[in-house]
Length: 102
Image 1 (cartoon, one colour):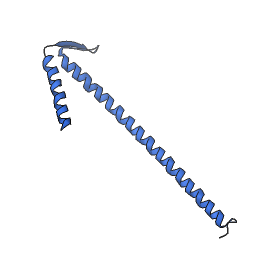
Image 2: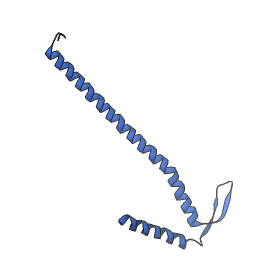
Image 3: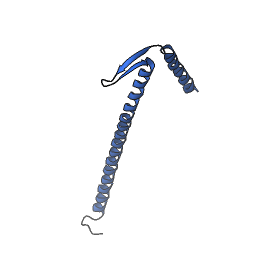
Image 4: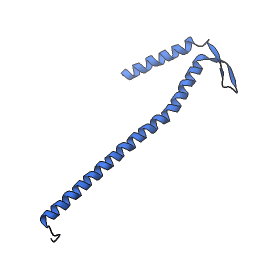
């Protein structure tokens, strides 16, 4: 319920920003092409959306690398545990029969 209230408040602020900046316009140039009389809120909104589109794949790849590292650490731990168990089994066998004869 609290998340819904926070979402509504943020959305209301966002709409208020748009309404207050409807009359403010600017020109946007990409060097080879210029857009004339673009509302300011559209340029800010598009910049925000572009930033999110660029950051999402980066964040996902970071999460995958972290998960892969944790899996590798778990595998190393499992291998060490298997090695320790094998050495312990060999030690027990030597104690029972030092000459390898059962």
